Image (spheres, rainbow, N blue to C red):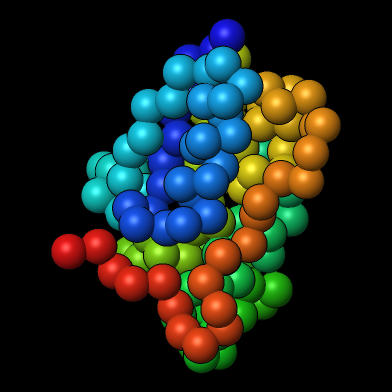
Length: 136
């Protein structure tokens, strides 16, 4: 059993399913809002490791879907600055467990915690009709 810090967008159905999977596997999940967490650049950057910058972004973010932000055209420093200004751009969840951090539900430590025995929900679970509602 592991203690898991899980940074989510409150109200996100996919994040809710992801938390349930971790809890059903016997882990203790502490959920925090990705949107209100007091991020610093170095702390946020630590969740992305050596992954390509474009994968740091939430492809369902309104500014990305509208073409206002092009993840493949942004360097690491600019990506962090954009995300600090608009946390909806951050790929979620951000997860911290067992001394490791990641962005997304398809990387270690998440895969280690769930032993990759099932398909892990990653994308937005809402229909393509529109973005997830913002928290109140």
